[in-house]
Structures are given as C-alpha cells and as structure tokens.
Image (cartoon, rainbow, N blue to C red; front, side, top):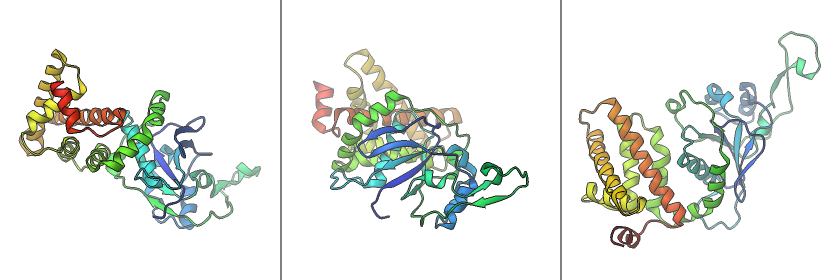
Length: 305
C-alpha cells in the first residue's frame, strides 16, 4: 500500500470521550458515530470490497488509530506499521483482545453514519421502514488487515488505562528505533502479537518461544541458557532469582512436551501458553524500557556482575 495518512479501525476498545495521544502523529480516536452494516455497504460501493467480513463485529468497533505520514522518518516503520506497533504495545500492556482489523486512507468517522438512515432521524414522522442515502463517500483506499475470525470470539471491549497510554507515549519512538536496528527484536515483537492467530495452542506456544529464543540469539543448551539469562535480566540477585530460574526451566520443559506433540493436559497447555507469553512480554518490555536490544555484554553483566 502507498504510504499516506492511515486510519486503522480497532476492535475491542470501549468508546472514548476524546483522543488518546500515543506519539507524534499517532493517536487513538473515537468514531464520531456508531458504525453500522449499512455504512460498511456504502464503503463497499466506494471500493471497500471486503466490507461484509466486518459485519459480525461492527458493534465492537468504536475507535480508530490515526497514523500521520512521517516525513523523513528513520525508525524503520512506515505509517501503517506504526499503527500496528501501537496495537502491539497495547497487547504487551495486557490488552490482548484488541485487533486492528481494517485500514482506510480517510477516517472511519467519515464512513460511520454515512450510508443509510431511517427517515425518522431526519424529522420524518412516517414509521415505515424507508431509508435515504447520504452523499457518496470518496473512493476507498485501504482494506482488511491480518486478523482471523476464530480469534474474535467472546470479545469484550476494554477501557484503556491512562498509565498504559502514558507508558506507550514515553516508549513508542524508542521501541520503533530498537526494532529498526535489530531484526531479532522485531521478530520477537511480531511473535508477541501474532501467536494469537495460531490454529491451536501448541502452535501458539511454538510461535511465542521462537520470539523468546530470537531475543537471545541462541541455538544450543537452550533450557539452561534461556532460564539463566531471563532470570538474571528480570530479577535481582538472590533467592528470588533462583526461584525465577527454576520456574523458567520447568516452563521450558513443559514447552518441549507441548510443541513436540507429547501427551499434555489442556490445563497444562494453557499454563504453558500464558506463562510463555508473560516471559516474552517481560523480556520485550525490559528491552523497551532500557532503550536498546539486549546485548551479550548486558547478559554477562546481569549474570556475573
């Protein structure tokens, strides 16, 4: 897609009283009115070919992320992917039911309420089911983003806490810079976001651990080294670090059983999935808050310092 201003329709956030600024040229905005299936059909008439796919979740879409085109940006993310990064950082803060589901080159507020309305809304007292069309929308430029229907079940809209939006505002540009400088960090970020789209839990666990292992860039003695490195970075020296080390070793052992197809209970698979995601999340957040990708020197200092 061309790089222009983008508006990403977001599913799973409660309606806002006003915009939330996440970074320069990046904010969450409430839609001006309720989005309906008729509005989507109107967008379809203007070029949004996949509009019908969104019909089941229309009522859950009350906000958009606006991403302004960045002139001369050196962070490595284009305008649309800055919106993706915003949803990923919200995921890392605990909002794991949020999805950016479609993008448009003009605001979804222009689409919401644009198409067909009951005449009674225009002062017509006739109760017959008759409608009128508003003026046509501009030519639609955009489309669906990468999301999967099975991940949208039982979605309950969440409210964005101010401390989480403030954290993103503080760290967004630093995170974008780290991702532009480190392929392994960017790979870990993607794993933290797209494991939700795996067909089943074992595949999701494998995807999460690909992100964890990418952070450290290691391919041998994984169980010991991942456990040692993670515990050393995340926990102060002492008994708490040893406890964390043992916990991650047990998690890795369970991970191996899960992804290699051994007999594991559904409860243990769920424990492995959630524990693995929290470990990946904590390592990414550590790196973001330090303002750099985790280096070998930093790991050595944490282990031996």
